[in-house]
Every structure is written in structure tokens, then in C-alpha cells.
Length: 356
Ligand code: NAD
Ligand code: TDX
View (cartoon, rainbow, N blue to C red):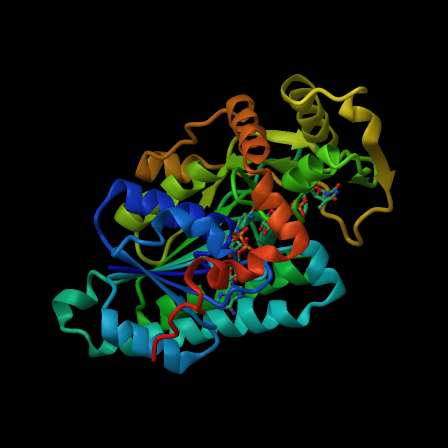
């Protein structure tokens, strides 16, 4: 049994689905169902006895402790977070509450839980923290990619809150001996990403005939990784990562935002042709405040120590992704209309269990 937090969001849901498809070990999935949590993402496992969904807040230490006591998971895989940089610029409070205080509350519950376990189980327990490359700040063109030794320099309220959570995780290992593992990953893309993020937003706006807003000059660089590859990396770190270590996870795939948007337009032109090329909808808009210019991950440590490398190329991954959004227009429309928030009532006639 593992406890996953944030498993109704983009990466968490992909992780839970991949996990249950590849092994029989059950998952307790604790998610608050914020605007970003979508139980429709987990429709494929709604009748699967190996998946127990619990709606709740990671800041609720009593709830987390009761789940640990009841289910005795061998690991916590911690995805739950406020994850969107633009939202953190306009309303940072929730980012501090969930990313900092929520991670602290989980660490406290995990520490107390481990101290009560028999020593055989204590040595098995892992706390895997899912984090981001944004904690390292911004690179200039030509700078070497981020290694695990790069000093932290977060620039947005989002990245500062994730940096704080990374530091708490580090401190719980050094001070209390909690067996923590941290993955600092680059930008993910793939199925089930909330359409506020660059790639799904651009696809949705293109198909709706709306402007496709590129911030600034479109020259900001991100290092894109297919979400399935990130999930595989997390499984590998959980299996073989050394307690206390951090692992950078990335796609070796730097692209400017404009390159990504052009690629999306070209794929849509071939798969869903409109009267004119979708490129006609691209608009350059005001830049994001404090917009980091470039992220790039040096993923040699995880390859050397754990044998993980991304399997998906950007060319195949992005095509697969566009295909998924074209085939799941209902999923996008439900989000745009807010109907996804009623997924449980629609499918079960009641709210999911809140465990005590
Ligand atoms: P997401 O916003 O799609 O999903 C976040 C999930 O967490 C949602 O289901 C939400 O309901 C849940 N949640 C939020 N606050 C909660 C709380 N207080 N208690 C319980 N559940 C709560 O995010 P994502 O893109 O899937 O990111 C998952 C993790 O991966 C985050 O920690 C993020 O920082 C990290 N990360 C994301 C990326 C990326 O490109 N998306 C890259 C690197 C790291
Ligand atoms: O409309 C847009 N136009 C645009 O030009 C949006 C939404 C974004 N952008 C730019 C900003 C970034 O340079 O595209 C790039 C990607 O933006 P996001 O999808 O918002 O991602 P980013 O800010 O890079 O952060 C993401 O990657 C790291 C995730 O949201 C984080 O959770 C993760 O930690």
C-alpha cells in the first residue's frame, strides 16, 4: 500500500493510473479536489478495489495521521500542491498554505508514524516529494543545465513555496532521519493537464478559434518531459533512490515557447484542419511578471545511479498529446463549463468518502 497525495491532478492521476496498470499494490489517494483536482481523471479506476479515494486536505494533520494508522502505507508519494505560476502571482496565499504548511503537516505526520513502526517497517518507509526545476531560478542562454548542486534561487511565489517545501523535506531527513527522496522535474506535458498550462491551453484556444496568448517575445525556454516518463522516474526513485538524495528529472528537450506553439499549430493543421492555419491565432501578449527565461535539467545523476532515461521523444509525445485532447474534447468542455466539479454527484450520486 502507498499513500499518494494530489492524485486527482494532472501528474498524480497519471501516476495512479500507471501504478495500478503495472502492479497490484493498492493506493490510498488523498486529494482536496481544488479547482485542479478532477475525479474524471480517475474514471478508469472508479470500480477498482485497489484504489481508495479520500477527499481531504494535506494540511489536516489529524486526517493524515488517521490514514497512516489505518492503512500503514510503505510510502507517501507527495504530489499535492498549488501548481500554476500565474495563479501564484495573483493570489499567493494558497501556495503557502498547501505547498509549505501542507508539506510540513505531512512530514510531521510521517515522522510520528514512522516512530511508532516496528524497526523492520521503519527501514522500508519512504517519503517521496515531487518537486520542480523552478526552485533553481532562471538560466541565461549558454549556461550549463541545472545539476542537483545548483544553489536555489526561486523567483515566483510558486517556486519559492516549492523551494521552502524542498528545504523542509531535506531538514526532516537530516534532523529526524526520515527516509526522504526528492525529484526536481522539468515541465511536464501529456493527457489530463489542466487547460491553464501552456500546451493544453493553446490546443483548447486553437480549436475554439480564440487567440493563442504567447507571453513576451515567446523566446522563454522550457525543458519538456512527457508525463508518463516522469511517472516512470518517480517509480524508479521510490524503488531504488537513496534516502536523503535529490534527483533532477528532465527530458533533454529544450524548446522556446514559440517553437512549442508552432509545433502544436502544425500538428493541429494536419489532424484537425481549419480554413486557415492555426498559426493565425497566435498573439504576443504582455509578459508574465518576473518570467524566468530558461530552465534546463541535467538528468545525468538519475541515469547514472538509477538507470532512468526518458523513453518518449518530444516529436512522438506531443503528437500523442494533441491526439488525446482531440479525442477527449468532452473532458476539456467539462472543465471549461465547470461541470467536472460535479463529476462525483453525476457518477455516484454522492460525495466520495472522507476517512476519519
Ligand atoms: P495539478 O495542479 O494538476 O494537481 C494538483 C492536485 O493537488 C490537485 O488534484 C489538487 O486538488 C490537489 N491539491 C491541491 N491542494 C491540496 C491540498 N491542500 N490537499 C490535498 N490535495 C490538494 O498539479 P500537477 O501539475 O499534477 O503537479 C503535481 C506536482 O508536481 C506538484 O507538486 C508540482 O509542483 C509538481 N511538478 C509539476 C510539474 C508540471 O509541469 N506540471 C513539473 C514539476 C513538478
Ligand atoms: O498562456 C500562456 N502563454 C505563455 O506564453 C501560458 C499559460 C504560459 N506561457 C508561457 C509561460 C512559460 O514560459 O509558457 C511557459 C510554460 O508556462 P506554464 O505552462 O504556465 O508552465 P511554467 O510556468 O513553466 O511551470 C510549469 O512547469 C514547472 C508548471 O506549471 C509547474 O507546476 C512546474 O513546476
